[in-house]
Length: 442
Ligand SMILES: [Zn+2]
Image (tube, rainbow, N blue to C red; front, side, top):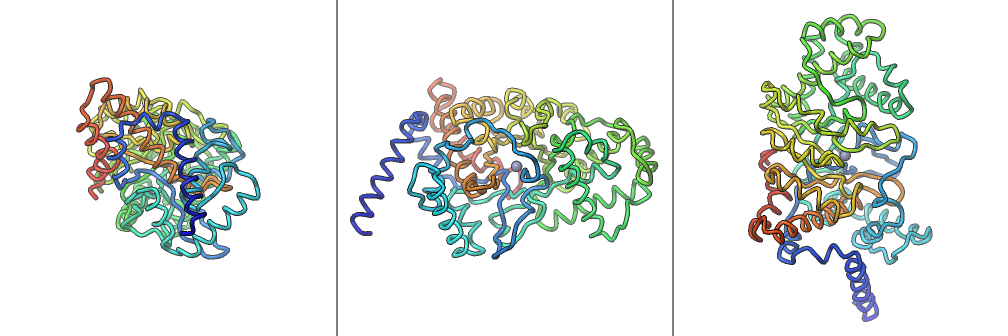
């Protein structure tokens, strides 16, 4: 390395270090805990990685409900333009040399990113995982793709579309976001029906349920490790326990004709959900719920509250299925800390880097750790946010801020005499990977 480059590198490292120092919280993680956390090759419980694409090729399968389809929306300030995490991520991943986001600097960044992706080819997604010190990422995608090898990326497909086989016009009429979301769910269901050589819905409800079961089984044989519901984006999470004959009656009338009432349709949805959850238990795959505030300006925040799921968790018939509350139900974290006391309920703190700075995230994570540390999973929710923030940056920021928040939570617990330093290190390994290994049997 030429001397001038070395001086620049040292200066850059110093500037970054002093920036982190100014933020304050980083320095207060106990050094032994921080050291331990940095050694762990994480299992990321929830993310939306992009496949490797050729020139002119695009990837639209990273989410069943990509936010690109809905009008712009607001996020808490931590993730707004000008936050210090973006330049840090760009620096680490792509050698970005600036602390601002001036257009000419971003043009340089885009070129560096493009060149690197081209140079790495199919190895690019795994390279991103290496930068985020992540061994395995659960890939919540409609389908897997090139450059997402099964030893590094474990598939989590979406199952919501099966709950909405009837006329969805009243949902679509709610607001522009629901219009986009239900349009996508209908398209996905049509696609799966076409694959199964079905021109239209089966006349019999049992035949429809069999079609759903076959799809779940084929996902499992295709490598799926869990099924994901984004139900909170579509309707309330209070899942009832309807009689089969009632759901069957509504299905048989309305699968062939006009629209059911909201109450009637809910019976079909709830019954199909329970069918899928039972099947998930039989197949040994956990069920993931989006559980937190949601993207879009019409998201009903109350549906992000994990307490709405308590009747489902309390159903003895559901105890063979494990459930995972993604995003810790944020900001209803106290409620989620309670829910993980149920024997078959887990949570992750994915997406916390979008919701809160590490110091606040640490307070929420501490609640979880004080409740049931063996049920808490690390996650990033790495996703393409558009512009210059892709799944690469959010994977890195999620890993960086996630470890920092976990370190702060553990440090506070040591300082308050709740746990020993050794126990803190043990919990760090449990949360960053061992709990996930046990849950998914990797
Ligand atoms: Zn997600």
